[in-house]
Length: 494
Image (cartoon, rainbow, N blue to C red):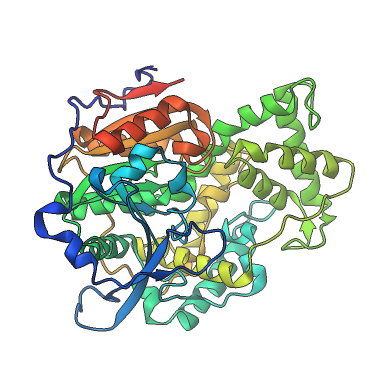
């Protein structure tokens, strides 16, 4: 472990955050209020038998707090040592569109004992996600393809079809999403989290936000700074991921460039049964050549959506595999097979109902958070520039999602991330992350200023803490959650 000095964008934070003398919920009789929640058995398989679920009612529209209510389903595994209990740790999921309802049973049980002793582990399904009050756009099945949800342009770089798709999908959301889809946003999720805190009877709330969950956590610490206890942000979003520059999507440009060299080194290693080429440089050139060939001569791919392997589907398979190095072999096998003119079986797809729900929540969040340009010329110019500079992603990160045709203007200004508020945030970040690259995480670190300390892992993959990080980084996060102790300055873990 050494002090992080690689970038001037990292602002060293001084001091150590120490735990308060009282548990976070002790000052106002929190435990008594929490009993008002009706905890029942959670639905689902493979859950820890200790996990229980309850429902919290919140306003659909916070500007009309006494109007229509919607339900949020939450889950809890209580502290394993009540004498050591500090409070509640909310697990904020990524996405947008993900949920953390099962996380107390899975991710939570990877935490060391002292963390599980200190907290009730809390999961939830954000507004719009089933089994909370759910929303769906009822999209055409073909529009649920990952290569449609990520807006890959045509083989020649044209965005014309993307604009048609955006209009069709946004029309479906407007027609089928009901009133709720207009009230799905990052700020409303932050408000919902504070209602969950209150329902749990906690004066303050600790949280572990992952990926898009770091943007939600950023909103929460800005909107409710004095309701926060210990906050961990893991795999960090650019602090302005959905504003005019569309930085959330654009992050894939750099993310792929950060991860591809690691894949290329692995895929050219002697003795690797899935070896693609003799050198890392050859891996890259062969991938680009294969994608170009498949754009011109696609292969049938039964069971896939769409049922062809073209250049776009190969690039999407690359993007998916780069989230976790454990998935490198599947990409290598696809490349090797496609070069021979064959295709391995298509990976199983999630149930359509789940994809419909996930997509609708994601669309509502991204499109309601901030306005996107509607002029095709804006996207065509950006895509052309991106294709020239970042050939691996072929212009996708600057293209038009369905937000380009979204019929509802944003109801409020985007999230603000600032350095005002308690210094109680620890950021954990992998150096090579396809979805939330270090370059964007450094922007969040800069925006938070003295409020945060950052730990960067010499590691590859999305989700840093306890999954794709380092023992050094895991230890620092666990210590912070259990004791409140942070590094005095930003740290690099190798």
